[in-house]
Length: 148
Image 1 (cartoon, rainbow, N blue to C red):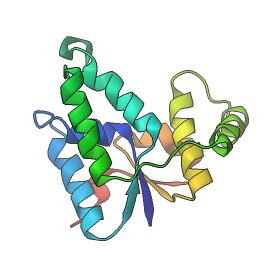
Image 2: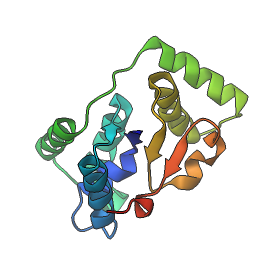
Image 3: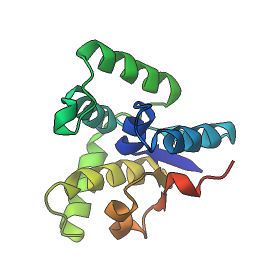
Image 4: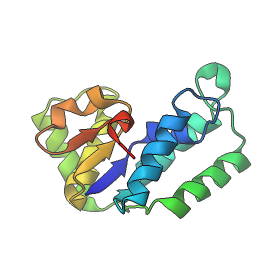
C-alpha cells in the first residue's frame, strides 16, 4: 500500500508534549517497519512551516526558523517528497468543482489530488472526517487503526 502522511501527523510527531505524539510516532514506525510506502508533498511542508513557526498561544508549536528547518530536514530524511506537477492542479480543480469544496477544505482536496495523480491509495490522518467525501477515491486511515 502507499500512504500520504497528512500534515497533522507530522505536527503531532514533532511535538513530544502533545497527547497524540505517541500515537503518531507509533503509526508511522509500524507502517515503515511493515515496508509500507509513505510520502509527503510540498504542501505538507508548507503547512508544517506555518504551524511550527506560529506562537504557541496562537495554536502553533512556537519553533524558531532554525528549529523548523531542522524538523523539516528530519521529516524529508524519513519520508520521500512527491513533487508538484501540473496534473495535480488539474485534478484539484476537478475535485473542488465536482464536490463543491469550500473554504479551508480546499487544502485537503489538494492532498487528495496529489494522491490520485500519484496513485497513492491511503492517507494517514487524525482528521478522518475531513476526507470522508473522497471515500470512493482514497482509503482514510486513523493512526489508531494501525496495529503493530
